Amino acid sequence: MKENINNVNSKNPPLGGGGAAIAMIVAASENNAIGKDNQLLWHLPNDLKFFKNTTWGFPVIMGRKSFEAVGKPLPGRTNIVVTSRPHWKATDTITVASIEEGIQKAIAATNSKVIFITGGGEIYKQSMDIADTIYMTRVHATLDGDTFFPEIDESKWQLTSNQDFTADEKHAYAYSFQIWKRKA
Ligand SMILES: NC(=O)c1ccc[n+]([C@@H]2O[C@H](COP(=O)([O-])OP(=O)(O)OC[C@H]3O[C@@H](n4cnc5c(N)ncnc54)[C@H](OP(=O)(O)O)[C@@H]3O)[C@@H](O)[C@H]2O)c1
Image: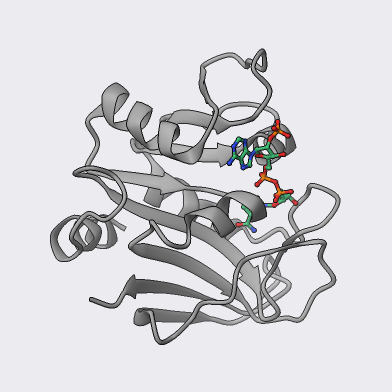
């Protein structure tokens, strides 16, 4: 995992963060479904571990609906929640009115060189043009969702790493950990 983070720091010039790299992290089915009824579509313990290890210690920016789906801040990370509701608050989170404000507050609060965008669909869509890395867990199934990750445009993004895992007793679907980098 450390290796992945170092890749983000060393190989990617910062695009959206005024000195910080912006990385999106997501799990999506073959048809880009990421959720339904404000919940995930699967339980994949290895993906949860990957998410935790990759984002641990970094600021995470998420939409208000994704925050409420989890219901509490992610431990060990600076949690930043984007909402248009001026009085919205939650314990141990920073509330912001836009993704850009979230990035500024992440830098001000942590001085981190990497900022993670952790969803959901609305936030990913608005972050496609400012992110320089996508950590994609591709879940090898076509699933019925109501929320989707944007199509990755291969003229703009390059797959730089792919690790395949088969389904097993704890994982109903095969999946691949992928890293996509924005092309220069
Ligand atoms: N598979 C994955 O990796 C993954 C990861 C995360 C989430 N998810 C899933 O994604 C779904 C949630 O995604 P979603 O698209 O419904 O919601 P979301 O992106 O989590 O949150 C949307 C909310 O964010 C706020 N927001 C978005 N853009 C804003 C802007 N420019 N300025 C101010 N506020 C803004 C608004 O909050 P207000 O309404 O409060 O103004 C909006 O309602 C759930 O099913 C969740 O389980 C999946």
